[in-house]
Image 1 (spheres, rainbow over the protein chains, first blue to last red):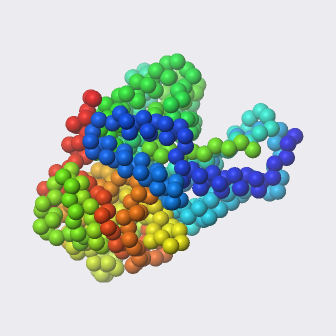
Image 2 (image 1 turned 180 degrees about the vertical axis):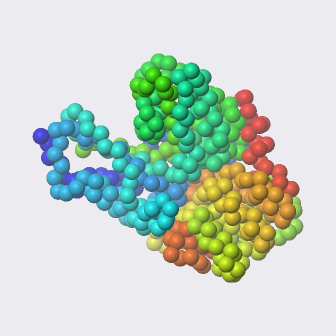
Image 3 (image 1 turned 90 degrees about the vertical axis):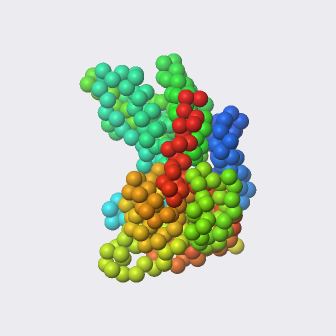
Length: 280
Length: 183
């Protein structure tokens, strides 16, 4: 049994909220820089240069990369040998979000009720996904999610007969519909299989997989590569104003499913695709 | 084509702008996003005056992050314009001359742009830190209780935008993607 103070969780989450909103993660930086070199449209290149300058200014002057600093999504994997001390874990996570967004001059974008819509003024609560795993470590991923791209995400309940072509078409449909609204170049997170809610959660998790790291399942890896090529042939381009860079990565996660179903979720993210990871 | 023009926009400037032009704006603009649009619509429905005169002005669909000490504003990039589509034709009919946002607009907005000789610019989505450098001052002028969604009067200097829909309804989003399809 290992004891962890919940205040350590609060401190880590506070720092990760600020870090993710000001610095592009190393994996995203690699694919972004590669796109800057390969873009064929002059206007597309100009937009990528603007985004590149934006990243430098954000880091140097501590101005958030985007004004939509997102709703804080937290994945927390808890080793089953861990015991938390010092209060409620959920409260500690939300306190980390509160301090990160207040201390870090991040935008407060959360409303208390989806229809009454009163701002909570501290960006809490976050959306928290817990997973119990073997071991005595705690792995925290903070992925603040902007809603320009979140609004363009989709779930498709396909039929088994739709097969792999059906899955590919669903992904392409979601990307084309998102077009300029999702701040391309985008990152496309996909969940295939499971149930209605499982595929949506997998799509979100897929966005936290480092860009450029492919699925370990050979046919899924092939599908990721094929879709990235096909998405970049849509012509949508940087800012949706035409070009050869529409997506920077396509990450697909899969899970067993029911004999009657083929659920597919497509979670679209902008070029920033914020995620910070830390282990306690 | 690159152009430097002043805001509020003159009729001559609007007439000369074409979809695809890269434009630097200098002068005064106002911000409004979802909640401010809803309130303005409610004011119009109740027969009340709007808190800012939209006639002749440009509205920027933007809700900034908080400013650090000594700075006029925080990160300040565009939000998705289509969420304002429901409210936009009424504001264009009241004389609003232009909008800055990102993403596609509805057919009703396009009709209202053409009917009123207005213009829709896109700023680059996700470039909020860079764009904040072109904002010289920011002042809340209405709906302060809405926080980031309050209406702000901004002074901008060489604020970079691209004409996405000109007064004739030419739509850059429709034409630009076709050019690079299949490459």
